[in-house]
Length: 200
Image (tube, rainbow, N blue to C red; front, side, top):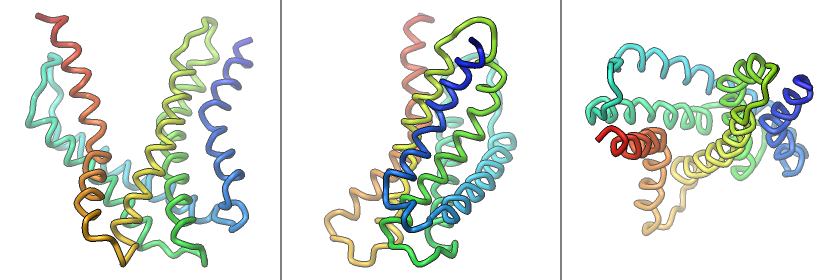
């Protein structure tokens, strides 16, 4: 039964990536190489973020909200934007359109994130004797991250690859990219604000 639970959670976590690849024109244009390159760029970006987080952020002894640390954490979050910029503009892609390029980069980015953050906990935890909802929720989180990564890649494609942008949309595109890049800090602030009334 535990192996069955592991396979269910693994399919929920990694299955939508395969379905997205095969259901969209990405499989027809053979963009798997682009997705693999984007996944490798994500791994390098994650390593740089890990070093920056370990170097510049301090571990607090209590769960209080420190605006300076959160601002620093949000700025480190822009390393993802720099990695996406590199994946969209500097990597050599086969003759694929801009529309398929951002989808392939976003898909590779999301898959690498799922493998890096969810495979080991899924392998170790979901084969336990007790059933928990945590790994099903991790799979749903991976699905939401797939949409998030493709959205961020689409915004990056609009910012860096499209030459004839409408002038009125440029501030909206940059504001949305900033919100998406700082989303982890925003959600952590929401956790702090919901945690604070419990303390007081």
